[in-house]
Image 1 (cartoon, rainbow, N blue to C red):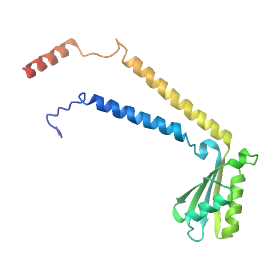
Image 2 (image 1 turned 45 degrees about the vertical axis):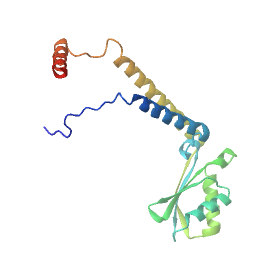
Image 3 (image 1 turned 90 degrees about the horizontal axis):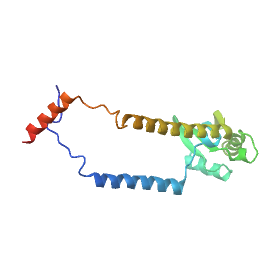
Image 4 (image 1 turned 90 degrees about the vertical axis):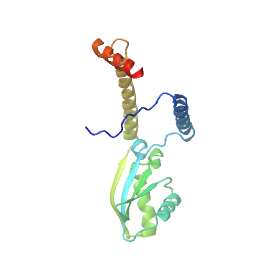
Length: 185
């Protein structure tokens, strides 16, 4: 049999205080980040629009972002999609909360880019997610996470209950004890 490590004896228990401190530190950092930054949901959860745009000439992404900000579409995510001439624009549907439809962001983006680029770009596809669908997705995700926690807790309670842990047979235990006594002396 192929053995990579021989006679390995690692003491995992000795640095337990350091490991507990590291674990508590990471938990505190994570909770602090959650407390100060909050959860930033994507448009899948808040409602919004995804547009795939194809330009005739490669545009400057920072210019696209500034055009959208100036036009009233704030915090839009612009990502390259395939080549340097295709981009996706993801924007939260804030206009829908003001009473507009789910296509209002797409209309605003088209209006902004039509003024600047004219016919030098085309909209390949547009997808909209309403806030109701996003709310259902968020609630479903929270329920799934809580259910996974509950099932894990039930499994651990069942597995490590006082009488249910499988114990080695007495013959096996005595053989192991004899080996341990002979090796320690």
